[in-house]
Length: 403
Image 1 (cartoon, rainbow, N blue to C red):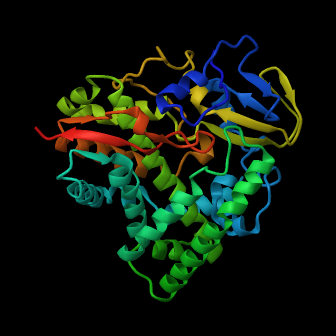
Image 2: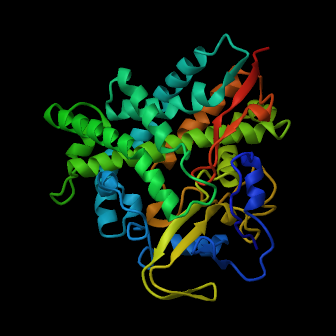
Image 3: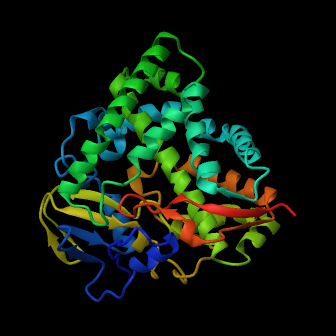
């Protein structure tokens, strides 16, 4: 049995966090976390059951979270925080525009963007992998997908940096901490909302060949997305399509670096990259917990949970459940099957998962092709994200060799 411990100390390497997610548990897969006032669900079977039952475990946490008017537009199109039938309506509409074919069609452009970004550091033996590649790559792809002019892509990077910095939060934030953090980022949210709303209105007047225009045109049973709902989905795409890819790429490089021979094996057999990416996702889920609100009194793991209880489905612990994974504490780039829950489960399975996977596979392949040697020379120079917000690296200096 595995359980999730609190994430403490933003100086921890991502590699060291999984140890905080595991310890012997004699009391079963569900426990009450007194200091956080929430129930933790810790094994894969129960986590999957919670995520697959939106009628009992609601994704709408607005009643439990601090209110901030600037985030209302975000909520209107963020179907991750909705339950059926509203969730079904929005996801169906968005699915008409953001199709698997659209994502797969991005492959050549992702390769071109990676090439441009790596060309920019072609004469360097040392560079910051996050600044040079992991951060700008998904932002550029998303902005182009939405039809944002190239000269304004930097705005998206600046907004994302503020929204996911976690600088206002401690390691175990309470309601007051969250309220202060929301207030601090509210001006950025307001600026982003205004910009995206103007972009949507411009595309409504002059449609183009981009995702924004397709979102505007999407229709199901005579229903279309409102401008505010479209703004909310763009914000969601910024999360699902950007920060997850950034974290995944950084975590992959760190994980491979700390296992000598892994990089060489992947260079020798690029066919191992897809399962290697899945193993990084299992090993270091960028968002190791997902919150749910109990809608009615329920018995879970032998415990009676009252209505409106907060349940935290611990993805990091579930991904290391020995009942679901052979040798769960071994990082294995050949692991198959790999039923990790990093992208969620059920109706809220991550909408940006196909894009994140595609970007990671292409970027890692091109890194390996360009650099026979890629190493992290000193972890003292690595800057980590606040694990209370996301598990990943903010700055990752690497040294490379082309010979």
